[in-house]
Image 1: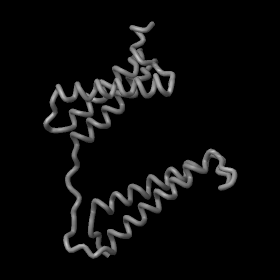
Image 2 (image 1 turned 30 degrees about the horizontal axis):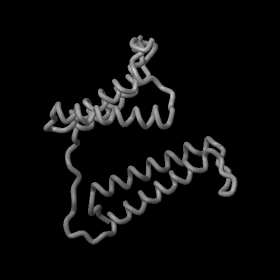
Image 3 (image 1 turned 120 degrees about the vertical axis):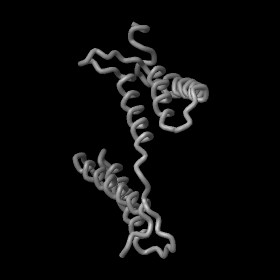
Length: 162
């Protein structure tokens, strides 16, 4: 058997590995039964379903009758770096890092940083559209998480709020 569509094949493998990892991790919790579900039931079923979807995708790439075989492209290192860095910086700014003396900067600053860093992943990055997007995301997140859902986490930097 030959792989007819490399991107789909590797995506299917990724689904299978992630699904099995979640299912295996869920076994550390009480699973229960369908009638009386424990905390591990949903992640176990979701992980198994995800692995099943991965198996179907991999199977289709091996038996499909494609006339044109797709190859996987080069790694896009720039977007990969900026997207991962944006998420790490968001987490650090939102909660801070006490052992090294980094205070919590709060939701608003973290969202602006996340948006600007993630936007730099695109090749034709522009400042003004990113500022508009960051502002819209900050306002929307504040209204959703703080006002509507009443979640308790820092909104503004500690050195401003005290």
